[in-house]
Length: 175
Image (cartoon, rainbow, N blue to C red; front, side):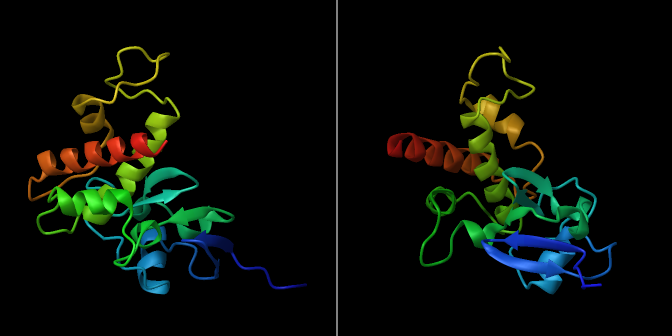
């Protein structure tokens, strides 16, 4: 019988085979096994959002998910969104608008914001959307609600909001 890994994952466009402990969280797999330390270990209880990554287009708290659960998944971490030589629009916006203080939550904030922008484009309503059948308004309340799972202990929320609004405007101009 041929050997089969527990899971095959695509992380930032590269294929990986996971053969480790089935209790290994996705967060620990990304950080410890793949060396992708941009994803931060914050509360380890899914409450702070520092470990947010994008799995098959949806944002998740990687501390609450096991690596083995993502067989066949396409995973994007902060390293997959851009790099120091070619920052993504969101990464540029966070720098331009000082959307970080200590920077610890920033990778999770940016991954969450990237997926949130796709949610808005897809017309997904949030808890504050007035009409769930209509395209969501892109206002401050809508962005704050959608980003409420990502905490910033430094209180840079106004700058994070400004960065996301800037990135949304840049993306609108590009389309």
